[in-house]
Length: 152
Image 1 (tube, rainbow, N blue to C red):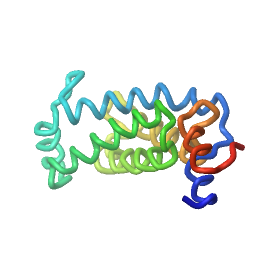
Image 2: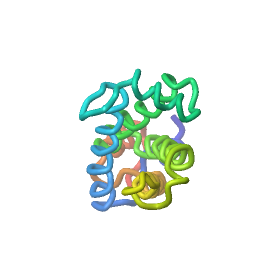
Image 3: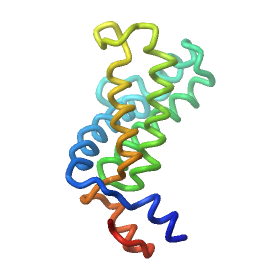
Image 4: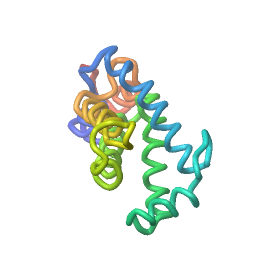
């Protein structure tokens, strides 16, 4: 892997703040993904989530549920670990934009009306992590050393 690509993927100038963002947001996302994929935590699983997604025009519903659930579950776990933080954050940011504009935008800002404030918050955190990386306490640092890059 080239040094520039290694640096772009794994290096970070975020210190402790990245950890503070990554862990709770990653756990929250993983839980939401588990609802969609496995029906855990009161979720509907792939079948139920897929039917709902198809009913709002996101088709094929099963595939959309799989992609949204996978982005949230696996992306959330990646954030918790600080593993491929930037790519995971970009995927999550995209998934949140889809959720905001496909589901929540017409309901206004507030969650009490099924609005977009939660999705917007997750989008902004994901965007910040995509920019600054996983920080000092991330598995990305081990990968950076392994593939010949240097820590910042």
